[in-house]
Image 1 (cartoon, rainbow over the protein chains, first blue to last red):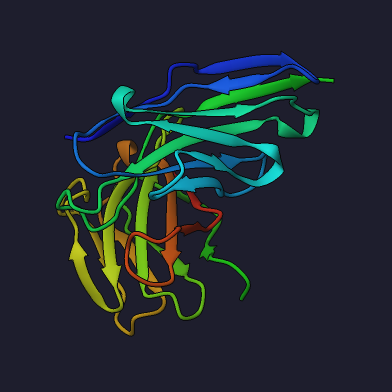
Image 2: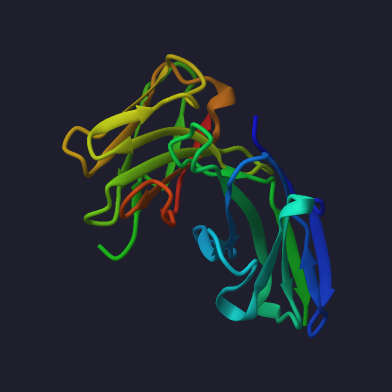
Length: 116
Length: 114
């Protein structure tokens, strides 16, 4: 069965620090990859997605992620975090040819706290 | 509306009660998903609709869970004879076209079973 692992449960950073959140998935076939963010009191929003093409994808608010197929990874990065980036971040995958109907498989999430 | 809406936002039920959770997807969105998010976990897939057809219900945890989308727009997730382990946030998501498009999520319904 497909699964997604997010290595960090809670990350605490100071403003202007660089961020990297790890995400690994287990599925050998073609995948679509997503990072969603949930700000306090708000619903899940898409940060960025990878379907095909350039493995380095850029999303909203200065976030980017790199798909490394050989490592089954899709890590999220931001060079300089802001207090407003405090949120929970979820990595998710779906497998277009894996027999599913497009449902997303989510990791457990990483809480990011940014100290002003 | 501009986004996916869900109602109620909060629901408290006594064990054994039946509950119904509603999802209004973005107008024109063909695909609709239900997910369950337990505390401290990521969302887990429950069921999928393409228009009014329920194409996948493999994630429903028991036969107490039932979902419908009779006219291909609004969907209802019903849980019969609720149990404490049903306590979770229930999320609805919709997407425009084929199921591999971006999914837009609603705010969720937080269900607490006492």
